[in-house]
Amino acid sequence: MKKLYLLFISLAMVCFNCFAVTVQGEESAGVYLNLRSTTGILQIYNQTWGVANITYLTSAARTTSQTQADQTNTLAHGLYVFCNVSVVPGVDTVQVVVEGKDSLSSAYYTIAATTATAVTGLIVVKVSPYLAPVAAAVTGIAVNEYLPATWRIKVVHSAATSFTYSCSYNTTAN
Image (cartoon, rainbow, N blue to C red; front, side, top):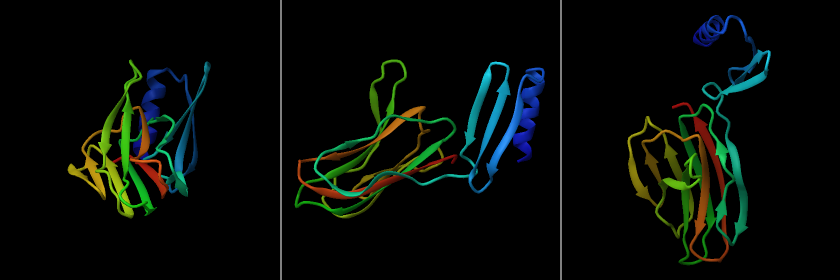
């Protein structure tokens, strides 16, 4: 917490006291910082202290691939995606993909993708610059990269048969 205050004291000195700093929340729940200036309020959320488990898809039967809307990364270095597949229809497969988005062309690129799987169980995708890379497998993958500014999760079906699964994710500072 002392480092945080020093950062804003330095910021205030550079800006000649153009910002007023307000801290909201508790360390266990995350901390919101409001910077107030004459031009408006800039709110920053520090994900270092409180990383929430976000539900992307609740457990349900699905017959089509699922693509998440673009997610904006402000402070996170990494991402952990958890997909729990409970029903697979025969030999058809499902694959979990994390994509980044190029800010200039708006084209998507693959950051991490599991091997397509026709078995039930937990699939974990890890993206972080602090991880040792682990090759793609049916149960997951670990990639040594920073989470980009814009990203999304895709669950790709090999056919229009009914899969049942849920997906959640955590963004992390490490």
